[in-house]
Structures are given as structure tokens and as C-alpha cells.
Image (cartoon, rainbow, N blue to C red; front, side):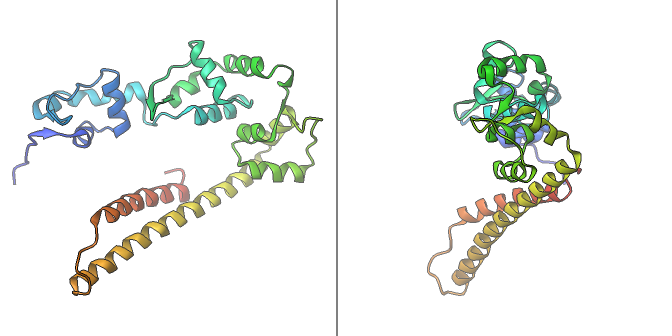
Amino acid sequence: MPEMTRADHGANQLAALLGLARWQLRLGLEHGLLPKPDLEGDRWSAALAEGARGRGEEVVARFGDEPPVGSARAAARLASRVGLDVERGDVEVLVAQGDLDVISTFRGFPVYLLRDLDRLDSDSVRRVVAARKGPLTDTVDAGGAATILGWHRKTFDRIAGERGLATDRLGRYALSDVRALSADEQLSRQVGEEQRNLALARTHRAAVRAEDVIRAWILRCSAFLDGDADQPPDTAPLGRALRSLTTIRADMARQVDPVS
């Protein structure tokens, strides 16, 4: 059977044609690497879409394979890398200084590429944090310590208690003590395993909720087929649940085998 040629393309079809994720397509359009739609309804003609085929690789080369993150996640990534309690405001200062680019916005908030965050000069980040903290530079509160370590706050509170970590008059921990926890490989493996198990349990609960929605829809559909219900069930909740379950199961597979 001959392959059918589309008359035009929506955003999803164009992204698939170019081998891009939707966020890559959006950035490619925003930054002028891809052509804007030339038809009504934000659609691309077949000719324009075909002409853009080779540009997908340019988009990946420019923006990478990992979607951009907001200020909170950007601060957490920098905190883990430089061993300081980086905050969202510090990220904004780095932008104002010209050290970091805002690559786009999401719901009105700036987002950043992970590759740009990883390329930032560590000393520049340290100077920004030191300027904000002043004489408190060598100490962190519990939330800042958890951010540096990449742990949940409750996990840090528990381990700080188990290890007998001292606090100053302000209830702050010595930065050196927090970094010592980070350098403890056995502890890091233990906490990492705990957090993976917790994440897997949360994902499993989300999967069960989506499965329950699908099973309930099937029951309502069966009732309609058997004549026990006058109207068929709405398909919108089914579609949302199926999409959610597909995403959740992919996440579960990655959590069970994070190397793949």
C-alpha cells in the first residue's frame, strides 16, 4: 500500500516528522530555528513541513535532549553541584549578571537549559550566594542542607538527629558538616535507595488511580452495551487516564532500571 502524504501538519505531527519532543519544537519556533505555521489554525503545509525536515538536528544540537527547568529546580541543580544552598533569587541574579540565559518561559515563569546550568562557572555561583548570605555563608538551615544534599527535608532532619549534628544559636548547621554527609558514599547510597523506593511507591499509587478510572469507564461502557444505562460514558476521562497511565508506567520502568 503506498504511503499516504499529509496535506498539512499540526504541532504533534510536525514534532514527530522532525523527531522532536513538543518542548524542543516550541523552543525551535521561539528561537527561529523552525518555520512558523503558514496555514490557519496554527498548522504547517506539507511543503513547509517537508522543507524543515533537516532542521530537527539543529534544534537538538542547540537545546539538547533534556527539557528546561524552572528557577527552583535550577537552584537545586546548582546547589548540588557547588555544595551551597543556592536559592531561586540567586538564579535570577546570575541571569541579571549575564552569566545565565533564560531560554524560554513556562506559564509566565523563566526556564533554563540544564546544559547551561552545568556550564556555569562555579566561582560565579559561589560569589552570588556569598553576597546574599554575608556572615552566614559557612552555615545553612535545614532546608538549605537538604537542597545541597538533594534529600527530602524529613530525611535530612532524621539523619541530622541520628548523627548528632550540632547547630548554632540560630539553629543552623555548619556547611562543613553538611558536605561531610555528602561525601559519605555509604550514606548517599542508603538515602538514594530510600528515595527511589518512596518515588516508586508514589508512582505506583498514581498508576492504581489511573487504572481505577479506566476500569470504572469499562464498567459504565459495559452497562451501556447491556442496556443497563441510557447513555454511553464520556470518553474524555478515559483518554486522560490512558495517557496518564502510559506516562506513569514509563516512569516506573525508569525508576526500576534507572540506567536504561
